[in-house]
Image (cartoon, rainbow, N blue to C red):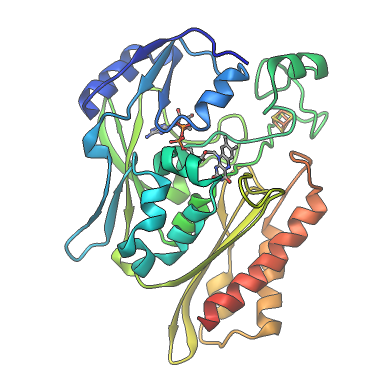
Length: 327
Ligand SMILES: Cc1cc2nc3c(=O)[nH]c(=O)nc-3n(C[C@H](O)[C@H](O)[C@H](O)COP(=O)(O)OP(=O)(O)OC[C@H]3O[C@@H](n4cnc5c(N)ncnc54)[C@H](O)[C@@H]3O)c2cc1C
Ligand code: SF4
């Protein structure tokens, strides 16, 4: 599969990047590590006139501890850097665990945390070559007007399938977005729309620049578990992040984030209320697993059945919770 023709732009600063984005907003794509964008362009899912290669913006790379107020991560920081960061491993272990499960080592060397957060949603009927999609008929997400997954509906249900966002949601992360009107900082939980073909609140003229992990969730115990077909490389088909804080053997705070089973990564509601002040045992973990499974709304967007993926959310939640409570 060949790449469509495009003009390559290589800014060196955030200001230059925003100028390019603003000028060519009608047909431009940001390229960070390119590990998802390039295969998607080869499949002709995106055919932008301009590709904006942001890899040379030095200020967007690296992990910085902020005095007394958590950690700042540049959007271009690679997943390998995150996985290997002793600071993050010690203070935000759920994030390093999730990053370590993305794709394969080579892809993690290229892939960035910003790209993982901004990752396009996925569907069996969408992530295919142009020839395949032509043969089966185009759908709402690209070039068509019907949905093969929910026929008769008008909404796209493609699943958000990034591994780090559920962990970041659990940590109450915020993201900085820079555009022509300046910079704004938003909680990650407000970044996603829950609509498969318009999944993030990011204008074409905007860039995600930084991620902030608050001091308040530092040192929370954390575990990430994911379901995939090939353990060495595949996207998640169901993923669960668990964080908790203990005090005197009991849970003082807890959050669970799930991915790959809805059009957005989401936090499971009611987790803290169920766990606060209690010690985690099999029965309680089972109850919370049920809660997570009820939050998952998988459809036939992947090779595994929705029933199996929902069941694995229940099983992984239970296992992750027991593991986090015991380590
Ligand atoms: C075989 C294979 C397996 C994979 N397995 C997994 C997996 O298990 N888990 C997983 O989470 N991902 C997986 N991926 C997807 C991908 O490798 C990762 O999600 C990676 O983190 C994407 O980062 P990137 O920098 O390469 O993004 P890119 O491909 O450069 O960009 C991805 C998207 O984000 C946009 N974007 C990137 N950075 C920014 C920014 N700073 N501001 C605004 N928009 C931006 C791009 O325009 C594009 O739309 C896999 C990919 C492949 C090819
Ligand atoms: S969920 Fe429906 S509209 Fe969305 S990509 Fe899949 S088939 Fe297309």
